[in-house]
Length: 475
Image 1: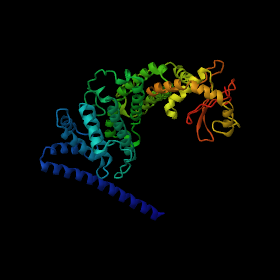
Image 2 (image 1 turned 90 degrees about the vertical axis):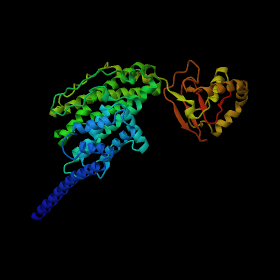
Image 3 (image 1 turned 30 degrees about the vertical axis):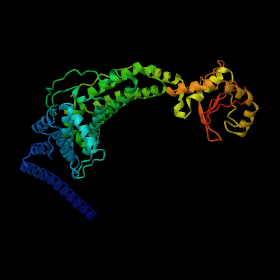
Image 4 (image 1 turned 60 degrees about the vertical axis):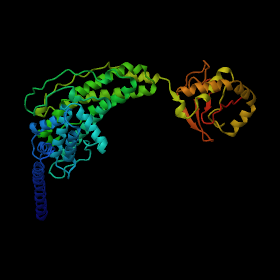
């Protein structure tokens, strides 16, 4: 027992010595880099010194004078090579030799400050830099873990979610030119514990407020995902009392209002257009509305978790949740349930002319009738072929009479995207609307669209791959 305790104490002393050496090494390396940059005395040395000093390994927020130098060097009037160099050096601080959590977190804070407070040309150049260097996910540190310091698990976890949020922020800007940093505070946020003197301007509407259904279904999921990533940036464990983590969290918290406002604009636009959508788009819209309700509930829990962190308490007001009628969700679900089920002819590999020939043949009185889906076989069995020969005369005559009409339908269908409504293939008014449509394999390896048994004994059967309608009983 005594030997075990001695071994444990020795191992702990070795680890403490190792982590202390790692911290000392990082500080020495930063001083050497600063000295080498000053010796060069070229155009980039001043920028490199500012980057190293803004992200050096001390547990304080980045100094404002170094961040200001970088902001002035990234403005729209500066050379693009200079902006690319700043992005490159900051990116190296995230990757070189497995840096400690202090260096990585302060580098992400500097990136965030530049994204918020420099004109949009910096974001554009950041995206171009990622495309040229194949570093599109430079800020997405999903696998980061600090192995150089004791008890760094909580810090590494916060860095991962913070980096993912910044990456999603870039993705939303790429898709819809939405920058939540431009929608709120125009001055940098103060350090935690100090009073804010930031100026606020009224934000204009986003593109989600007036875009069409197609763009809305593509862009609204991105904004909802961005809000979800933002709500994940909650300090936990030891990070709740760290000043650097609190400062980075304050930057994120100030963007909650603009992101939530953009999502609400998209949801209001969705509710206006929802009852004009087809079945596929309506299903997507219903999922987006359910996600909106879940995120609105999660916002309350997000602010509740920040109540115990003094500097973040009451930093920004809780956004007013826009409540919808309680029965609106059930109304949307009922609308989707009552929409007709349609199948695209192009998706099933059937030519629209063949389907048009079937419909015109039915209207002309030729009729196509199907054998059942039971033991008699469906589309391709020997019994089907025998029955087809018995009634083939009338079917062939009707098919020839409507051949020209089928060709005209085929030419028209090539120019448009034809939707085949399985309910409309049988025009008899006495037959009720089928509720289930299935695709069943047959012995000839062809898929046959079949409906369940109806009151009419002659159910519709169309072989989409063998091209010809089957007249089972001769009309």
